[in-house]
Length: 257
Image (cartoon, rainbow, N blue to C red; front, side, top):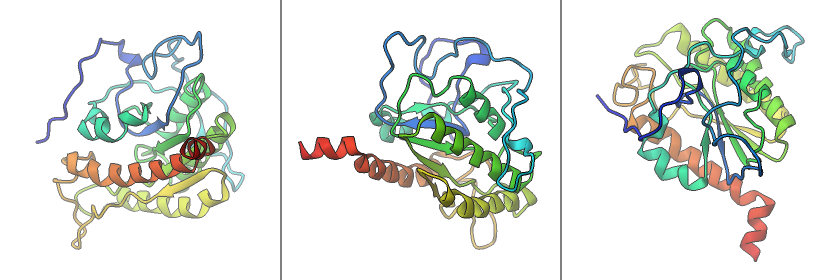
């Protein structure tokens, strides 16, 4: 069993904790505006309401999409997996913020984006990794929810380049949830190229072996990643982020100077 290192931190109210997991991570050199309240990624200005918002997004087909309805998370906990050595090694030097919450669905991410999570920051790159926890939604709905997130980020942070990570396979053996995640990825490969400032990063990483099984060395419970599993995801992600940062006009100007 792999025990993830935990960083000392001051306890926060249960509903305010921002443990790692699926969701949105803002990766860039960031600056807080003068007079901004609170610390980065720590606590919201007020406790979010418990009832879902009634705002709805529409899928590209025009159908109502339950996976694209913003709503606040009811119970927020996590195990600090993203605060591991690989995060500190690869992403902390980029002045990265982790806005992911364990158990996130597309609706949870949309709610937070609509309620201040992207205020007072100006990221160069935003990484979105969400969808595997949308158990009650179809693959089409999950993909539509992810598209809604990308569209909202493009509206709120038009300067940012967006990376959407594909959903990982799950379960020791082939199963319906694994099939649904694979279908979500196929749908995103078709839909995301139609949106601005976004690209899909395939995160398969060879997790599924020739016999259809997933190793506990990659996912200790066949869902959550081990250190080795995170390395397979984070290293190519880091390479892509560095490539995108080098392509920004500010970075080019700095290099020329």
